[in-house]
Image (tube, rainbow, N blue to C red; front, side, top):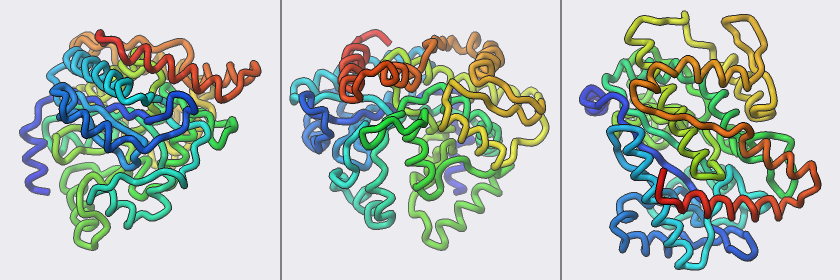
Amino acid sequence: MDAVREVFDASTDFTIGLEEEFAIIDPSSLELVDRYPELYAAAQEDPVLAESAAGELIASEIEIRSGRSESMAEANEKQAEKRRHLFALAADHEVALASLGTHPWANYLDQEIIDTPHYQRLKEDLGWVARRNNTWSLHVHVGIQGADRAVAVCDWLREMLPILLAASANSIFLDRQDTGLASVRTEIFTRTFPRCGVPGTFRNWDEYAGFIDDLTQFGSVVEATQLWWSVRPHHAFGTVEVRICDAQTTGPESTALAGLIAAIVAQTAVDLDEGRSKGDPLRGRQVEENLWRAIRFGMEGKMIDFRGRREIETRRMLEEVLAWTEPVRGDLGIEVDLPELNGAQRMRREFEAGKPIEAIYRDSVAETAETFSRVEP
């Protein structure tokens, strides 16, 4: 952990890294297919994908990573090129890529864990939990210089997780039915994995490092990636990583959401630097209450402003967050163009109008292919 502190102390503020996960499916049946090993091997022959394509637990999933970028614009440009190459590669191998938080009907018992030492160890350690996690998400890394500062940013970001989840909610279907939730992915992942969901507050690096040392000493973890919290300091990159969001159906939505995340992280750091404190971070149960509201209702519900002693429409809360981050978005050149309706809202409207789940999913796969294949970010 002393070495990790040095990584954060040498980090650069507000660098950006993007990670997008995709389901690998049969374009005709729309079923998940275990084609990751084949796609990954082919990606190693593509100079754009060789360093950016990766696996993520199950063999019917593939991820692309932008790598470290000095700005949001650079990250978007890099990721757009990687998207184009990945979707072309998938087409060459006669598979399709889907981008929702869950697959609407695939049976998790049918999915295979990637045959690598890392993921096979997780399969052994987690058992059913590892097998159950057939979910897809968007992760964003933002560079934060200073170990104590990174922990403080994570402490404050906890209360921003519900609004980010609500904005990104894109998984209403599971087991071939409408779950009634806006993000069933979050209910699957954060409620089953250990060391997941909303972390506690640590206040400073020494307190955080002491906890990690305890987990290591008593054999709970062997590497930092076993901390699956929805926001965490990333030990290798010197970044704060936000991991709460559902995968997005369209490329522009994913880009806009990543921009919002980056702006929230950066504005939080700036506010801390300039002494704009709101008091103490919210307690875990307060954050969890709003997180449940985001899981259940997404952008259609309300959240609790615990400091202001009010209930507020989630849409209005998002507008307030956009206004709050306006200074840093201007400074860093971050554009956030979120749609009027997110994926969960669009899917539910279609389903309630009588459109079958299979048709909704097929159309989303087509929209993903069309929008993620564009060269421009």
